[in-house]
Image 1: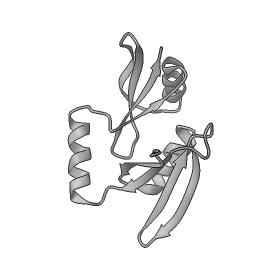
Image 2: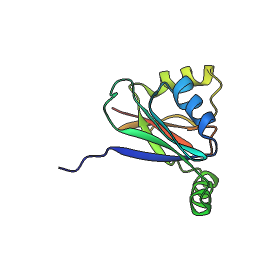
Image 3: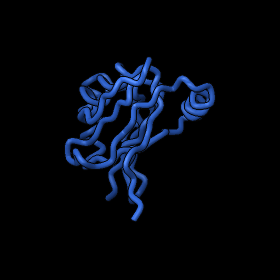
Image 4: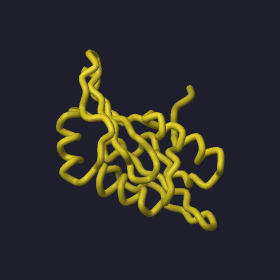
Length: 129
């Protein structure tokens, strides 16, 4: 059986990304291994510490940077996180200073919002009804 183990998000600065994804979004550090000038740096949901890891991948490769920048320019989120209540999460994160490019919006079977992760990405939050 194939399972998703690790997925990545390209970040400008790994230390800044770690602070945002843990202190602001609420993920917890799973792995932090030096790999030369960068780190193998993953976070997980506190609700699933042995679940899927999110690798905070340096965006240094020119192709990665162009890809990510093109998505942001078009307003397209790179990844999506599930939340129990998008409206409550937008309120919580807005109070912490997080900038949203799309406020909580009801699309029928799903409510979504899109935030700027301060590290070069747009991230969608979603609640399935």
